[in-house]
Amino acid sequence: MKTLLAALLFGAACAPAFAQKPAPENATTAPPRVLKYRFVPQQSSITFELPTTFHVIHGKIDAWRGSVEVDPARPGGLKARIDMRADSIETGKARRDLDFRDRMLDAARFPEIVFDGSSYKGNLAAFEPGGVVTADVSGTLTIHGVAKQIQTNVEAAVLNDHVVVAGAVPVFWKAFGLGDLSRLFVRMKEPMLVVFRLWAVPE
Image (cartoon, rainbow, N blue to C red; front, side, top):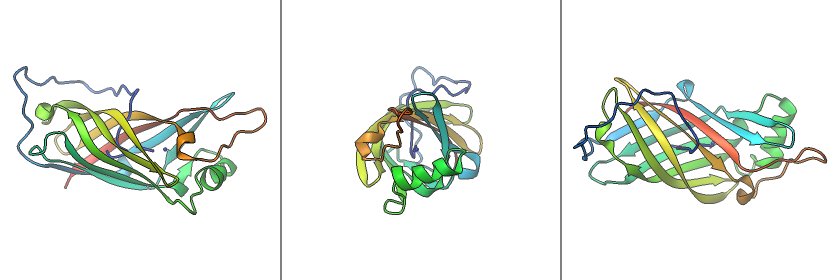
């Protein structure tokens, strides 16, 4: 789902179509500079897929902001955050949008969905234009006032003036205490899959 989500950030089950440039075999060190980026929502997407009995509901989060920072002096350390507005969810149907915002997320009481990334496992040696870096990212996802630890795999394609971070993460929404919008013959299922493609520029 604000995923809902670097920052948000970062999900399993994704296969972005980037041409990978492997790091040299003897490259084991990260770049010496601090990597600090902010995400550009206008160039990015955070979407979700929620399975039900007969079909899959497709939605997106329209209003969000985020940033990520990695300091090579702190191997494995990560500062990433994505703040998403719960009332910005859209599913293509106005009535269903209201149900998601009011009944499922209770957006009036819990207006924000937040991902805080705290650590990663990966090699930053290929972090240069033309390179592709993969990493396992761990952090906390907070929805409906409930915080849960999550881990996901991300892939970052490094270009001359920006980076594209892509991935997906399954969200087991019942664990966050979200309202169940199931009806008599149409049942909501788990997990919801949050897919992201985040355009980041250096700060």
